[in-house]
Amino acid sequence: IERLKSAVDWDRAESKLAALQQKQQSESVWENAASAQKIFQESAALQSQLSDVKTLISEHDDVCQLLDLAEQNGQHAEAVECASLLVELKDKANNRLLRHMLGQESDRMSVVLEVHAGAGGTDSMDWADMLLRMYTRWAEQKELRTELVEKQLGEVAGIRSAILKIETDHNIDESTDIFNVCEYVYGVLKGEAGVHRLVRLSPFGSTPKRETSFASVAVYPLPQEAQRPKISPSDLRIDTYRASGAGGQHVNKTESAVRITHLPSGIVTASQEDRSQHRNKAIAMDMLYAKLYKIEITKQQATRLSHLSSLGANEFGNQIRNYVLHPYKLIRDLRSGHQSSNVEAVLDGHLDPFLLAVLTSNHNNSQQSVVDRKSV
Image 1 (spheres, helix red, strand yellow):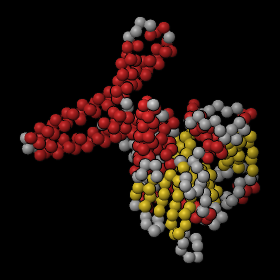
Image 2 (cartoon, helix red, strand yellow; image 1 turned 60 degrees about the vertical axis):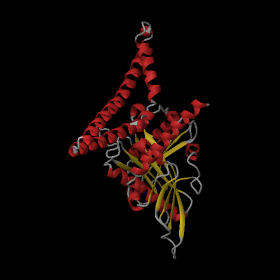
Image 3 (tube, one colour; image 1 turned 90 degrees about the horizontal axis):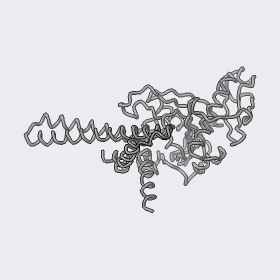
Image 4 (tube, helix red, strand yellow; image 1 turned 60 degrees about the horizontal axis):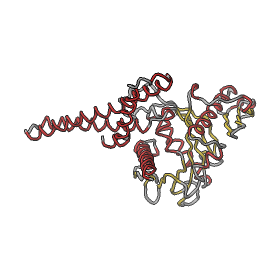
């Protein structure tokens, strides 16, 4: 509960609410209707937020008093029940804290997730395929709908790159655990963007040899139609071509693949997985909207190349997480410090502890930055 109070900046929020309520009582508040509406909406949202925290504090204090009385009177059954209620309150507070951390509009969006093999040759291509499977399994365990938009196979094994779409589930009771049925797909997966490093015995050599491989992950929010950036048709160059790789006679004999270039930014998207040119164009446009939207919300007016360069080079020294399978087994996130020796489970999609740790770490760093700026 104290972490939740810190997250909402309790003292500042109460002072701001008092100031807003004072403005509401002013006779001149309705002189500007638009400004008045904004004041009332902000006040209502802030009051609701503080009310939720106050309710938790009140319930916590009441249960603690009952627990003290039960222990003083030797009422074991009542004490156990109070202890159980405290655990429930802790879970409820954690749930509120997570939802507060994921308060941006984009956090509730579906995602387009890209995986690219980096330094390491065939091993890195295999590693990129392992990462693609890890995120697909995570989504399947959440019963979220996935669609493999694009997949470029490696020459020997694995993939050069792949694009996976994961759709948010909006039909969720807000009282449920955020990670059981994920309504914040972009919010929890955006921390996965960066370079992932694997250390293992290579399965591709004639003799076992320890190899280090790299793959990068990019995560983009997928806006709904009403949230999409406006694009002028004159800003697009649309090319069609024959799909490459296996896919049947129809795919390879017709120009069903589509490549779209956004001329102002230089962003290029493409799709060739579907036999329908119309469907491939729709998929490529979805990816373009996602990338433009992310640039917009992060205020990065740059080309796609510049945007991806912020992830760091796809090689040693820029990784966000290490996956060591030999000579010992350990996965360690370099930002949050969270680690696990159960590498098989993590690679099978059990990512929740890492996602939560990165989310909390990023939030704490953001809070500390605010404190540092105030102290300057």
